[in-house]
Image: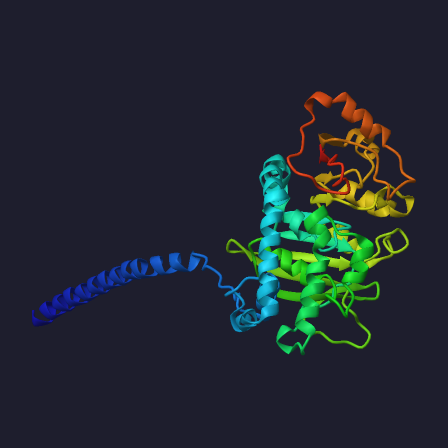
Length: 399
């Protein structure tokens, strides 16, 4: 009898233990869910990235931009007469530019080109020189700007290493190089070839960085781009040194309203001889401009020439929209095959006297006459016709 009782008590004890273990397991599982769920949820929240704006590139450019108090360890330079006067000149010139043209460009362009900007975050600006200013005014929401020209890339000045007399010379050369863009809205090629020499401003990078920062952004980093024959294009550090490799491009990363963006500039002759199916650069540009907005201004009518047909074809094939003045792609190409819908602005007149061998584009002239009642005037002046104020913008959207 005792054995039976002991056996029953054992069964009851085992059952109680199993029951407690089950409860304990349930509690552990429930507690685990309660504790880990918010933990897992927290890890899913993307942390706000931190950016270092106290860097050599941003500080140097702050001095060039006349931003007193924003150059960090270079702020002391504004205590000198040269950089103090430089700051006053830049501030007054920029204010005049905003009143005269820039503010109207921003307001008008961002409204008129809203649909084009909504389709892409890439702006392709061939024959641009360092003119990030205009590209940003019209297309501020782009994440990547790809710009081309014939001017050397160069370097930012090492302002803290300048010797006696060099600050004055550099400031004067820098201000002189900005004269045409401030007054006429474009850079003159032959002047850039002189102004951007190594012994003067030293390439267009200082002006490019200036426009990026003065447009309300902070510069985060600068890298160079080099070509390895016709095999590849690679990014290298700003302090890159090589006996046989000279950078032909530059990438400037900058911060705009909390978001990192990039400007690329390449020094490259894009005539057919150097820009064809055998060149790595054509593939690079083609791969990186798919669906882009292409913007063209003051381009010396180069895309009218047969020796630029490869670039012209690439733009027509790749672009979701082409926005240009009459110096870009001839209007007839937008009418061919019915691939584009066009909208016209401003007034059309013959090319300026610097191009006496060119005449009016009849297809463009006819389009203006046909749609004259719907052609809107431009509330600003932009391009070669700064004297007559007869400017034109062609807005071609791919169907």
